[in-house]
Image 1 (cartoon, rainbow, N blue to C red):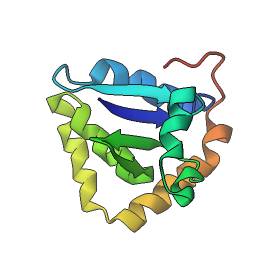
Image 2: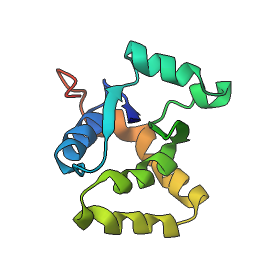
Image 3: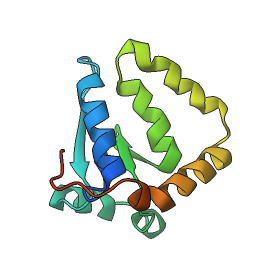
Length: 120
């Protein structure tokens, strides 16, 4: 089963998980777990050191890890058919997507308050 790791203490990640869960296609299987969980830490420990310290979202798809915008863009593959146009973000080159991703990630805790309880 594919796994998405999100920051359980982040308001943006929490909202993202709440958005994704009801929209995942019944034909797809995606688990969403906090990075801080034992399973999340175990998955991250299998990555090269540079990726372990990325402080980002992680998607493990068929055992292959994706981080930052590459993980976010691949999430459209798990959603119901009417969300498929989101996959057109592949047309934006990875370096540009990652600049936008890092801009938002750097400010996410200021823009979105931490949840009282992790929803995933």
